Length: 368
Image (cartoon, rainbow, N blue to C red):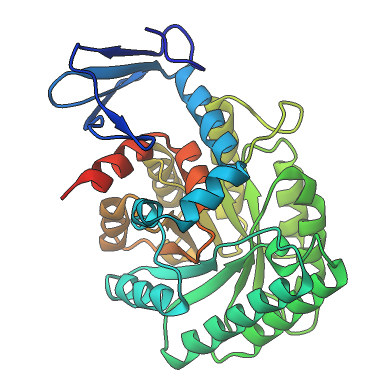
């Protein structure tokens, strides 16, 4: 029977003992995944069902599905308040409080990697919420200094009130970057990228922040390789020596703005990655793609780029084995640790980036 919303080739097959569904959660879920170069199959141990997804069509459909879920206000309201939702997110989100993030940071630091802490949230609706968000980041920077953690912070401009009062948002972020720059040793604020309606304003503000006295090297941008404009944006950022976090991108964008095929996104990532690695500026390569990581390592070796000239970046709870392997090989690694009550959009976008994570979450959710 074709699965609604997927192509005919993406088929869910069931035996008579079909899984029970309770409260929207499948009680017996797929517990294995077999992926080839052209397909991915998810199936349970008893063989009662499987999903066969051709990679050329199915994964793009799943990606669109999870991005759509990330934008659902109704599902978000239910999920973020439910006990099962909290449990579901716990693998990828450190917790809801500052101390949860600091505890996770200490643990990650002890195993070798550095950290970037992000208080989850975006599109605040009033000035008080924006000021509260900024105050929390002030607290984070204080605690990082007091506890001598190897960590910086990442934030979204809409979390600082960009949609409410642009001047307020700018003032709040200017204060945060100034605080980070004045720390001993100086710290760093990463301005995260959001959807395309915010791209130009975000980059303009990063350029402005970086030009302020004392801020050089203490604020950076994020570039998404699926955006067609990214090569031009990289050139402009590098012209001013601004540090870049390169990722693939996790928002739904139209074809005229963004590459739609994974092969095109990956090709542009590798192209931009090589430019960053040879720039002489310290950048972050944010990816869990082992093929791209191996290309980066080989390129660094071939071009005599030192291991400490850049860093790999990965998300909290994802590919911890690969994180540790890179650390043991002498490469720099930073783990992005999110925390907060507004975890739902973040989690859905992570599933959009890598739909196989949905299987992983489901297995761990039901594990005793």
